[in-house]
Length: 127
Image (cartoon, rainbow, N blue to C red; front, side, top):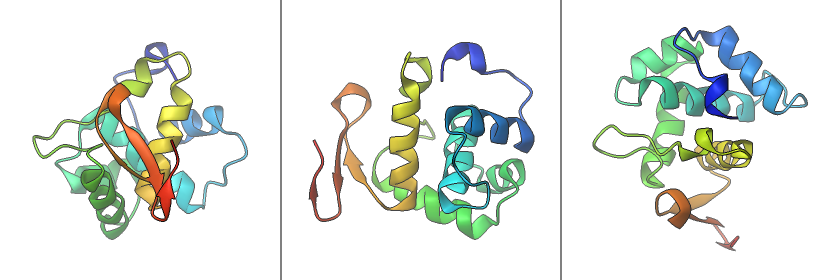
């Protein structure tokens, strides 16, 4: 994922295409895919308007809220409305995207921002 892949006219189909380009094996009906939709959409439009995120991703608001609470707790989404999506500027940004997806799913927990971010499972340290 890099800046050249971002544009101003996003919709659910464009997000789906970008996710499948990043990981062609992810199933569009899976929780992983849904979390990726929310992570990408928030990187584009912010996270404060959850209704708008639900509309853009075509996901139920309760699903967006669940992912959002986990992302807020991990400081990927900040209380000031900003989103830590530095991964979209990195050459190997797909890894950062999928780590944020795992946070949204509740598989990983994290703290810190950018290069200072550390990840762990609910049972112990990952790095």
